[in-house]
Image (cartoon, rainbow, N blue to C red; front, side, top):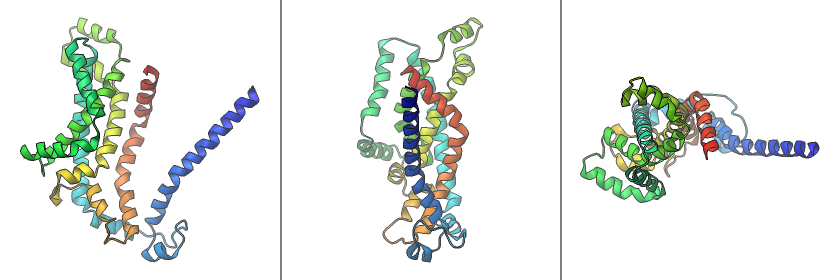
Length: 277
């Protein structure tokens, strides 16, 4: 039995190594290509290291991506949208989870229905509503769009996690004279940190890397995001793939830093959800 268990562990480790290599190999190729010259791209083996490590591609990527505008826009849309989503999802989940009436159950089902609708089917109604309300080509319109599309998943995640928050803590806070708002901000919200971190990471990934909704809702250059300009580097007229790879590396660094800083809470959130499920 002990020998069988050892073989299973080795087989699992070998499988994990294969999966890790399958994921990391394309990433390593992107980083490797970002340092190559145009000549090396077409004459050398794709797996060969650059002959001379240079940052010309990164300099060109900064210019072609209009980083002074697109980076600020992307950070603004992501941060504001995620903050609003986190607050609204936590507050809504708290109300739904602590009330058993039919209205609250119907409200929860309403949010769940939003998860069942294909994302692509929402493009046309979102644009029509935004256009009629004069929200297109506005920063606050883009933020509202991301909040509206992300709220169903946020409420679903937070409501599931609310079952891990002891009701006795809220009752004790009420007996101590805490108001509803103080109970939420000082008792409930700190306990939801793992779930909030999970929501922040997942939604930030989606918003930061979004292309379809950003290109649909924005046509003015001053409001465009990194991903919209990044796509232009892969157009039929573009052939500078070294610059394009450098742009990919630049665009992924902030979101990687976010994941690294919140991964502890992210893992807690996933583990708690798995145990309750």
